[in-house]
Length: 350
Image 1 (cartoon, rainbow, N blue to C red):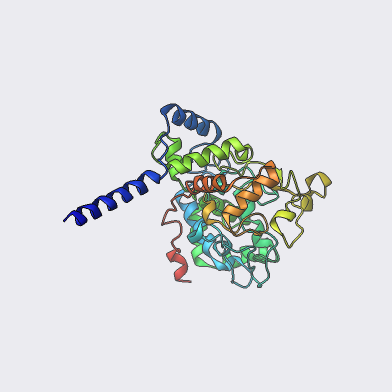
Image 2: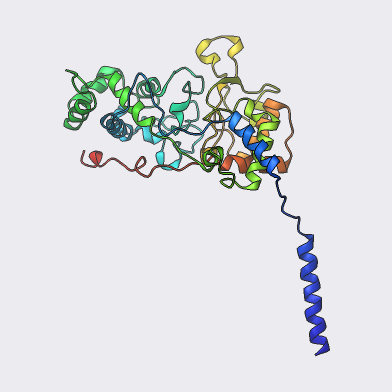
C-alpha cells in the first residue's frame, strides 16, 4: 500500500511540474485592449452591406442578369471560359493558380486577383488601369488570351440571339429600346460584383466585439500596424486603395524568385518612375487567395509576409511575428453568401 501511495504522489508531482512548466496565457489589460481597438478603428473600416455606385444603381434584376453573365461561358469566343473560371466564387474569387488559363489554353501574364470585395477598391487590375468593376468587367472579355472575344459587336450579336438574354436585359434595363449593349453588360456584371462582400470576424471586432478575434490575432494586429504593414494595407479593403512600388528596399525578384520580369504599371504608362509599381492588393480572405503577388510566385502566406517585411519595410520579421501576423490575416477570412456561388439555374437549360 505504501508503494501504491508513493506511486500516486510521484505521478501527481510530475503532472504538477509539467503544468507549471507551461507558459502562462497572457492577460491583456483593458487599457491595452481599448488602445488596440482604437488603433484598428482609426486604420481600417467595417465592411458595408453592398458597394453602392452613383453611376450604376443596384436593382435585383440587374444583379440577377450580372450573375448569369458572370457564370456563362458564352462570354468567351470558344465557350471554354466564364468570369467564374478565373474568379471562382467557390474558392474566394480566385482559381489558386499562379496565372490563369485562357479560352484557347494559353496562360495570362498575371495572377487573377479576387473578385470578392473588389468593388470597394478605387482601381482595378494589378496596374490600376481600370477605375471600377464596371470598366474592368468589359476588358478580359476582349483580351485575346483571356476570353478572346474579337470585338464588342461579336458578343452583342451572340447574346441578342438568345431568348434568355432578351428577357433578362429587358427586365434589368426597362424603357431602353435596345437594352442588350456592351455598356449594359458591364453594368450588370459590375452590379453583381458589388454584392460580393464577405464580412469577417474582424468586422465584428471593429464593430466593438472584443471577443470576435483571438488573443494571437490581436497580437498579430498589433505587429501588423506597428511594423508598418498598415501604411499600405489600410481602409475597408485592408489594401486595394493605392499603387506602390514593390521592392522599396530591394528588388522583389531576389526574394520571390520570379520567373517573369513584370515591371508593373510601367508596361501601361511606359514611364520609368512606374517600374515595379503595382496596386496594393486587398488582404481580405488572403488566407484562401494563394498563390501570392502579381505573378503568383509565392505559395505560402508565411513566406509572403516575411518577404513583404523585407522588401517594403527592411525588417526581418521573427518567426513569432510572422506567425502572429498570419493569425491576424486569418481573421479577415469572411463568409461567402451561398447564393452567390450557386450556379444559375437559367444556364442549366442552355
